[in-house]
Length: 76
Image (tube, rainbow, N blue to C red):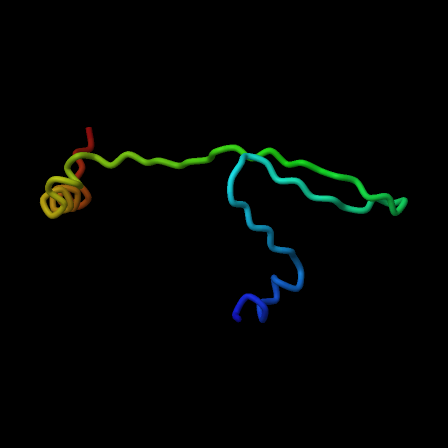
């Protein structure tokens, strides 16, 4: 219901993919001829590392970081 009322639904089409690693569609070129296009898809992932202190002792690590943020710097 919300999908039909979306402004994006009026601009773009929806295509559901069940299995596979490619998507095919047809479109008209400038001369009015239908051409088939195939798009190959690839896997994409993002990962991030956390210091062990944040996982095992989040409160103590946060306290230690606050101590470092507020300590006086020695000017040599």
